[in-house]
Image (cartoon, rainbow, N blue to C red; front, top):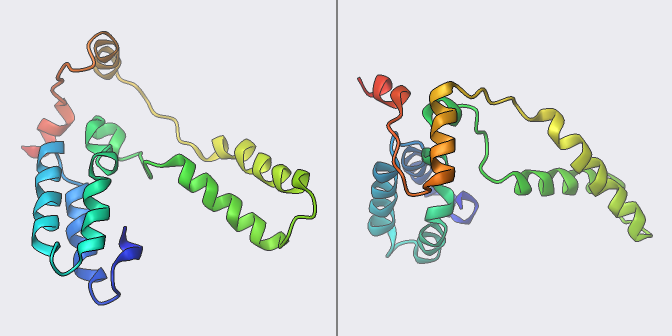
Amino acid sequence: MLGKLPHRARPTLRNLIRGAFTARTLAKGLAQAQAIIHEHREALPAEMACLEGNLDEAHSAPRFPLLHRRQIRATDLLERLCGEGRRRAKVIGRFHLEAGGLSVVFAVLVGAPEGWREVRMRADITAWVRQLGDDPDSSWHDPDLARAAA
């Protein structure tokens, strides 16, 4: 999204958008993002349409417990893998056969789990995950978020 912004608008909007996407609660983050869209819609219509179209997908981190949010680096693992594949393919240049390109993609996919962090599941979070399995619309009170807000 930031790549679509004009260079002069990037510093200001980067901080505003980062604040919306790192909000403590999902509702607060969505409200901040909607305010940004409303305020800048006339000056940057295409960019704000892009932000508005991907708002739900981009706000996935606040749906996780606060303990796990710190460990989530990116919400789109596929995007990172594609970027790594492009980086490795740039070094090689052009592939003469499909098998050569597939071997680079396979190498990226095989090596991807090595960089993943282990997410520790406390008993209360495990119980919440089970509860979500039974009732996906159920709510949960995050004790870490309550402590951070206090």
